[in-house]
Image (cartoon, rainbow over all chains, first blue to last red; front, top):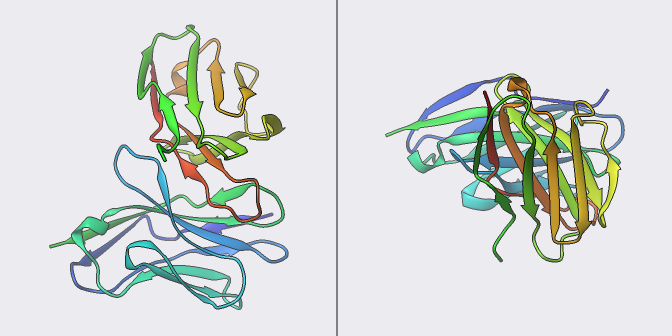
Length: 112
Length: 114
């Protein structure tokens, strides 16, 4: 069965420090992967995606993600966190249909 | 680009009443998705349309839920009769009908059924 896991409900990081939000997936075949961010009382916003090619993908607001096929992971990273990055982050995986499977979300809290 | 527009933003209704949620996708987008978000179950896909045609409604919880897309610029999600367990935030999203096209979400309708 196709699935995506975000093992951490919450990640806390100090402003200026690097951050990582973890995502692992399980699909048969070649996956395509997305990261979305959700701010309070708003819909999800697209951050970045991996389809094929370079394993390091750069996206909006200074975020990047690294696709690792051997570890079936797609972790979201940012070199220097901002307080304004505090939000709910969702990883999503698709395979051979229009449907995406979303993870349960990870709340990122950046402290000043 | 006005984005995906959903109405109402908030809906409070009593159990047994009919509820209709509305969505206007981004102009030119020909795929439309309805999601439900709750603390317990996370983000669930209810149904999606391509070119106004329902493709997969396997996520619709039961017959009380129905969705329509009469034209490319409008979709509705109806719950009749509503129940307290339907309380959630309902999102509409649209995308281009091309592989790997990102979803664009509306700001959601927060439904409370008392």
